[in-house]
Length: 234
Image (cartoon, rainbow, N blue to C red; front, side, top):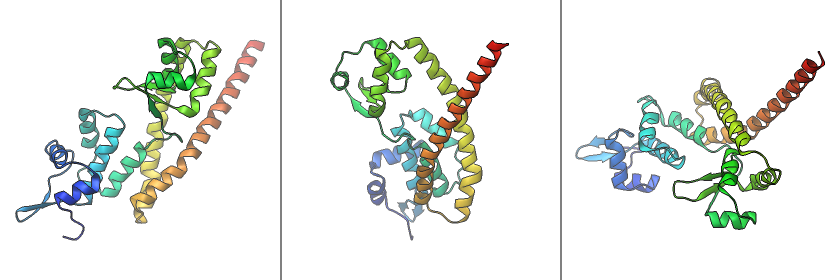
């Protein structure tokens, strides 16, 4: 019984209602409780899987998408393995977006924003419309976006650039995730590292990864410019 939780203790631990826990159990997102006589108990595995579901919900995953994501996790995955999934889902930007209404956004910017303006800002990754009709705003980048609007940056160019970032960003994310899973995580797992230690490693890695991507982009742009100049000179 060491380490096992009652249903009431589980609800307190993960901040979730009994109804939701039972619903996710029927959906197969978490395993059924461990039976001890007529009572059911829950382990660290239940806690880890419920916390993963909460993390996925926070990222806007639908129930169907959550089911597909969880289905790819082996049934014998340890709580530490599941914690790795949560860690890699955590936001990689330094500042989390601030949610505000359109009126609040326009008050913040000091101007009336047209639909085209909002489309451009969304393509630039600065302002996103939520399902509730509000906006998530990367406040630290807002002044940059407004400056581009003032310079007449074309909406079509912003949308095209967003497609480029999305296409190559997905590939980079897949390769970095695989590298972390196969080369980093096994080392810490073998050493008996806790999920908190793993999360700390990833948090420290994030700024280095972003800086490396920026450096690689700058080097590639310089090389591209040199190639273009050499081509025109022929």
